[in-house]
Length: 208
Image (cartoon, rainbow, N blue to C red; front, top):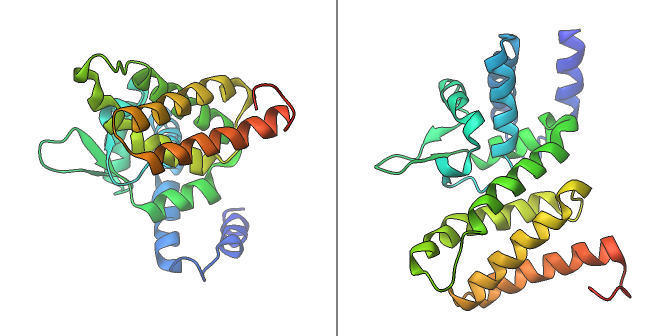
């Protein structure tokens, strides 16, 4: 069974896109965690799937749901994530690792992980107050992750997360436009929200 599973996985890998060795190593590291068959290993893999939806360069620990933070050490033990270094409370995850997890290992967890990422980001972004400069750091902390989440989710957003993700994207776009003066970034998020609304409601809906 293990041989057949590995054979199916191997045939699904597009070696023209990634060096096979890297894809294989990522897969083996994840399988090591899975094969331990411990409660901690199951949660660690769920955390890995969650992290694959965010921006890889720097993921603040604050953007990791508290219930999953204890499992970061297990992912670090297999070099699937690494400490961002310095005094930063953040981790990094290689973009290739993220891609392998999203395309090969996400399975039926996609909707749940999009929902978890949306909820965690909204938990922070909704605190931005344009009258309080002390909250502006939240916008800069979450900007790249909101953008990456929209790219990874596309317009296939689980129904349970649709209202929240629209609030999240609209709030972030408003911040970029009004506070950050980042017109291009704001427009990209507004355009994504429009594409989502057209898909959900149709071109003739009043909200579109």
